[in-house]
Image 1 (cartoon, rainbow, N blue to C red):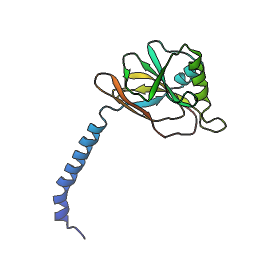
Image 2: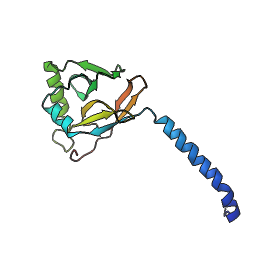
Image 3: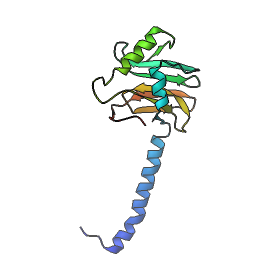
Image 4: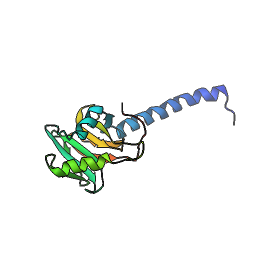
Length: 159
């Protein structure tokens, strides 16, 4: 079907309206989402077992096979049963970091440190894992209602 120039001109408002609605809907669906930002200082801090003040630490996975450790600023509340709180002054904390550090052992994928940011770019906490992407959803009261690693693992050096 070939459209005449006259019919094409009539379609322009409908196309513009469609993309405007699409843009508005996509903005609404992502309104509470934050992100991870690569942070070499966070990597060094985890590898040196440094504890950030005013942070609570959690891990995800089993104690024998953790795949993420996160330190959450005390101004935020991690609202998830999938995360286990860990005392950062315990020997278990060192063990968990060592086990996460073994991710990718023998390969080219190694765990990195990240800063967890909310939708406005505010610092929520730190993240240490070979999983380099996460869904980060925080409500208006500072409750982290979703902090889920995604299966995205990339190769290369941290920058």
